[in-house]
Length: 95
Image (cartoon, rainbow, N blue to C red):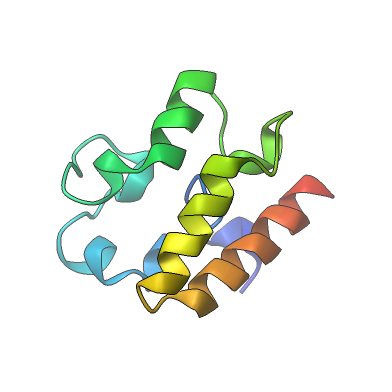
């Protein structure tokens, strides 16, 4: 699947692969309805404050908030997602 055809979160995650997106949060972190998981994400809050589409557009990329998000994902058993998100952001940064 092409990158442009995927639902990409602020941190680079493909939201369509997230169980929260599929069951609780149909708008993903890009929407405003999800307060349980995406609504509390520091990366999401930062992107909204900076009014950017995702972290690849930020002049401070990669930053401590993003690195902490990836670390938390890995600690929660989502290390593969963190690696995939890093790759997506790198692709977006270089496109």
